[in-house]
Each structure stands twice: as structure tokens, then as C-alpha cells.
Length: 84
Image (tube, rainbow, N blue to C red):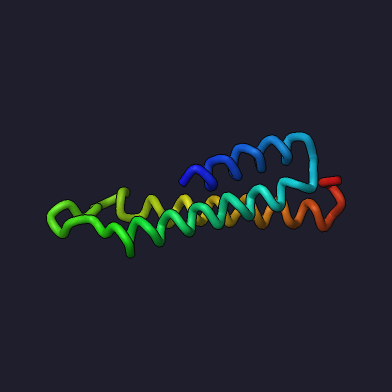
């Protein structure tokens, strides 16, 4: 959980500074988000009575999609030599 947040913050800072490290930081953030989702659903599943509903059911997947989008954006900018 902390790895994902730290990677996201470092990735955003590196992206603002146009550093190539943003790609690795966002990859770390994506891995943290996926790992957190796996742990929260498989290792510690919520009780059936308190199953998430509505927006709370899709929020973990939205976070993963945003993390993946940021990683792809940073990767493309690094390929175009915008990030050095």
C-alpha cells in the first residue's frame, strides 16, 4: 500500500522534472496498486455482509487503471526523449 503511494508521488515529481526515473517510479506504483488489490481480495476478503457496493466496488480497479495510464504516459514520453 505504501509502495504504491510512494511510487506515485516520486513518479509525479520525476515527471514534473522531466526525469526518466518517472517510468520506474510509476511501474513501482502500478505494482503496489496491483499487489494491494490482490492482498485485499484474496488474503483478507471482506465479509459477505459488508461486500463493497456501487462506486466502492470499482474503485480499486480505477486506481489500477490510473496507475497503468500514468506508467504508459511516462514510458511514451521517455521513448520520445521528452524525459531525460
